[in-house]
Amino acid sequence: MSESDLVVRSEHACFGGRQGFYEHPSAACASPMRFSVYLPPAALRGERVPALYYLAGLTCNEEHLPTKGQAHAVAAELGLALVACDTSPRATRYPGDDAAWDFGIAAGFYLDATQPPWSASYRMETHVVSELPSWVERHFPVRSDARGIFGHSMGGHGALTLALRHPDRYRSVSALAPIVAPSEVPWGVKAFTHYLGADRATWREHDATELVKSTQLASEILVDQGMADKFLERELQPERFEAACAAAGQRLRLRRHDGYDHSYYFIATFMADHLRHHAAILGA
Ligand SMILES: N[C@@H](CCC(=O)N[C@@H](CSC=O)C(=O)NCC(=O)O)C(=O)O
Image 1 (cartoon, rainbow, N blue to C red):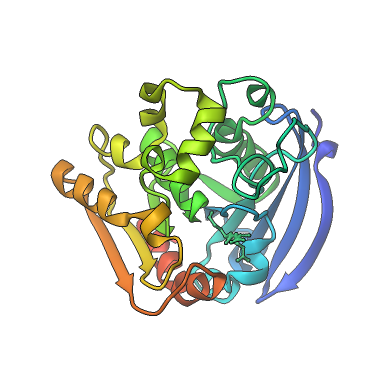
Image 2: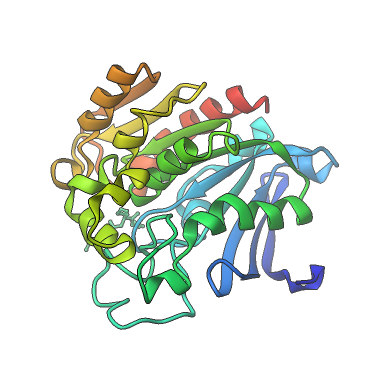
C-alpha cells in the first residue's frame, strides 16, 4: 500500500481545527474502511497530540461521533485528536449480514471472527488495534505513546475489551452505556455464536466482565449509564462489571444518571467528562 492509498473524502474547518473523513484499503477487513479524524488547533500548529479512539454502537459508523457527539469544542480546548472507525466491513457481503440490525453489517463487535464466512473479513479487532492506528499515525500529527479508547454500547464493549486485551496499546479507557457481559446477553450471544462459534470458552476472551478478573488496568475506568435506557436490563447490566471490578481491585467510576436514555443526547451530555477523563491521563 502506498501513501496515496489514503482517500480524503472531505475535510472541514471546525473549532479552529479540522474534521476529516477518510478511507483506506484494509487488509484486516479485506475491503476499504472509512474513518474520521478531528485534529485540534494544536495539531494544525505542528504539535503531535494524544489520540482518542471512539467506537460507535450497532447501526452506526464513523460519522456518528463528529455529527452527533458534540465533542469538537472540548477536544479543541484540550488538544485531543478524535479518531472514529466504522462498525464492520461494508464491501464484503455474506448471507444474512443485513437480516437484522444487531448482527452482521454495522455490528462487527470489535473482535476478529474465527468462524467462516465471517472470519474472512470481520476482523475489527485487528483493524482497530493495529491497522487503523498505523494509518492514523503515519498521516496525522498524533502521538503513538498516548492513545485512549472509548465507545458507546457495542462500542463500549469494544473499548473495554480492547483496553483489557491490549493494555500496552491504550493508556485510558471509558464507556457510555456499554455492553459489559456479552456472553450473558442476547446481543452478545447472537454475535459470539456466529463470529466465535459455539465454544463458550472462547467468548470469555471478548467479555469485559470476564477479562477484568485476570487483567487490571493502571488507570481508572469511567463508565456512564442512563437509567431510562431501554436496553439497560436486557443488554447492558452494568452491575455485572461493577461487581467484577470490585472483586478484582480494578478502579471503576460507574455513574448512573436518572432520566437519560441510550441516545446521542445522553452521549452528548457526558461527552466533555469523557474527554477530560482521557486528557488527564494522556497528558493532553
Ligand atoms: N434500530 C434500533 C436501534 C439501534 C440503536 O439504538 N443503535 C444505537 C447503538 S445500540 C448498541 O450498540 C445507536 O447508537 N444508534 C445511533 C443513533 O443515532 O441513535 C431499534 O430499532 O431499536
